[in-house]
Image 1: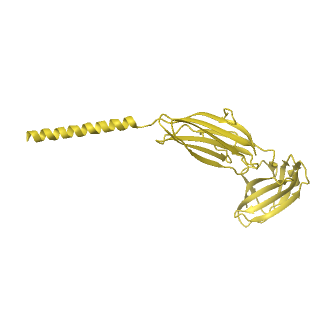
Image 2: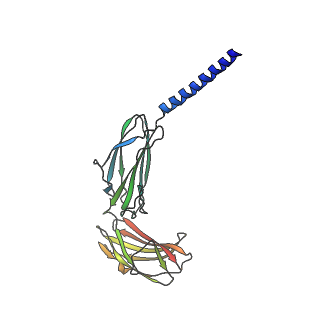
Length: 264
């Protein structure tokens, strides 16, 4: 009986030892150290938070990353800042004016404890305004590096520039409230370095159906005054819609400005 009890105690002791050793080993092996983005170069230079780039140009990106054990993936995220959002929890004065479509979401597999990745991107020639460039890195254990986000200000002298200063004597907001029969006037300008061709003013219902269109001939002008536009708001089949100014230049480059419409 005594021997049996002694044997049971030894088995229990070894079991506890094995459990403690296993926990110690797991704790020792766990990797909770995040990787690091050690260097970023945009167009060959260390970037500031706010970077100016040209539409139609090539942008080069170089990212160097390290980890104590093993890197896993790099994600490059480029998207328009159409709504003026930020990625650091702070409000910023710039952004919120992206024009055109350009998005990049690229995931690159990594290996080892240190790696440098080079990528190049050709910006579309029909975008303008605020974009974000994000760099995100994780290691094999899923630990995340402190992400980097940069403000890209895309400048464009290729496509026409539409500047709407006022609608019916007031600065345009997010939405235009109108009634059927209201006369809508504009203040502002459209400019283009090569010469404008024609301007369309269009109204669409919330289903995307065109309700009204007016066309103006710009006759190659480098600048065109928006006060030349005057339209009477039509009957709308839906309560909400869009008012758009669509411009083509003589090289068939085009730009578009729009505002949401609430018809009463």
